[in-house]
Image (cartoon, rainbow, N blue to C red; front, side, top):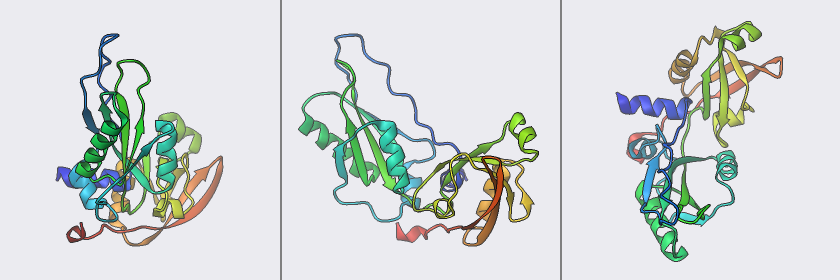
Length: 229
């Protein structure tokens, strides 16, 4: 049941969190990592269940620009972050080899490397995979103030993953979802349940964006058969 709940959170919405990196060592001491941290709700079994294609024999490993900027860019391309690695700074060839091995181990399609920000600090790597997401957006409960301002219950959308039904329907980060078909959206749990119940169908979401109420037709996807992964 727990695995099913994790899948629901990932494919339909919810929060994605990563544990904080290890505390830095004392000045002048080299880091003793490596350490890999899985994004909450994106464990190996969940990723294997939801990935859109078989793992690549040789995942792409490249230098990153900025962690946040790269994550935003890759999300728009349909790639979702599944983990973060912290590695001893040192020879770049060895670092690339280590990151490539980790990418193969976790089934990542792409890994980006970031050099240490200070002496003794670890190098950072982010790992991404292209997932099959029947909806493709995070969402959260509204605050009391938001409900009063909107005059309605609902949820607010967060990250929109490119190449998903949410992206195709032109849903945006910050949209408030008020109605699912003609049913008022009470909260995050109710919205998630409605999405699960209607997978594979066309649904109409009534949203509020910048004070304007509009409707969006969303063709929800389905879960790929487990035997294909």
